[in-house]
Amino acid sequence: MNADAMNAIDAIQPPRPIAAPRPAAQATAFPGLGELIRLTEEALGQRDCTAIVATLRARLPALIARHRGALGGEFLRADPQRRRRVELHHCPVLGYQILAMIWGPGQGTPIHDHHELWGVESTWHGELLVADFQPTTVAGELVRLEPRDAVCMRTGEALGLTPEQGLHLCRNPSQREVAVTVHIYARALDRFNLYVDAGDGWYRRREYCPETEY
Ligand SMILES: [Fe+2]
Image (cartoon, rainbow, N blue to C red; front, side, top):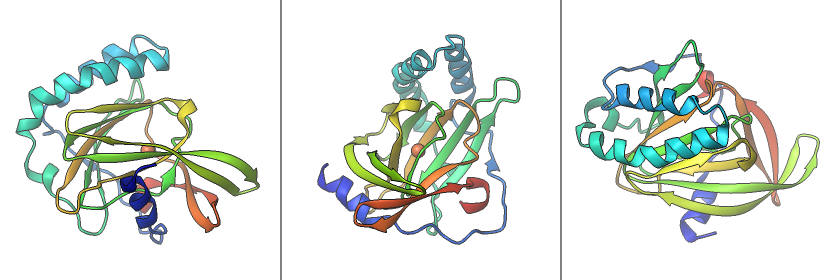
C-alpha cells in the first residue's frame, strides 16, 4: 500500500445524506463515443466476461490516444461539491452502460463493490487511483477489510474489473488537476454496496443508489 493509497483512504468521508432523485445527465458529444460503442459491442461478441474485459482493456489506450485531444467543455468542468457522473450511453438491447466521471482535485468514492458486474475503467484526463480491499471476516452487516494493491491509472490507461476482484475505492490523487474517466459496465451500475468505516478495520455494508446519492 503506497502513500497515495493511504492518503486516499484517510480522506474518504462518510456518504452524504440522501438527496432528491436526479437522473444521470445525458450527453452525446463525448469525443470518440461512436467508436467506443462499436468497440464495446464487438468485445461483447465474445460473451465470456474475462475475454470481454481483456479486449476492452487492450484496445482502449489507442482509442483514447486518438480522441482525448478533443475532450473539452463540460467534460473538463468539475463540480466542487462532488464528482460528476454523466451517462454517455445505455444500450437498451445489450444492457451495457458507458459513463463519464469528472473528478475534482482530491474527490473520490467510498469503498464499494460492483454487485458482481464486470467493468472497465479508463483515464482520459489526469490520473485515477484505484485501491483494492479484501474482506477477511463477515459478521452480519459488518465486514472486516484489509487493504490490498493500489494502482494509479495515468492518462490513456485502462483497468479491468472482473466479478472476482471485489472491493475498491477510486480517487483523483491530484490536488490541482481535474480527472476524467470513462467506465464501461456490463449493465447499468444503478445499485451496489458501499462500506462505511465503523472503526478498528471494520466496515458497515449498505446498499447504495447512485441515482439518488451522487
Ligand atoms: Fe468502482
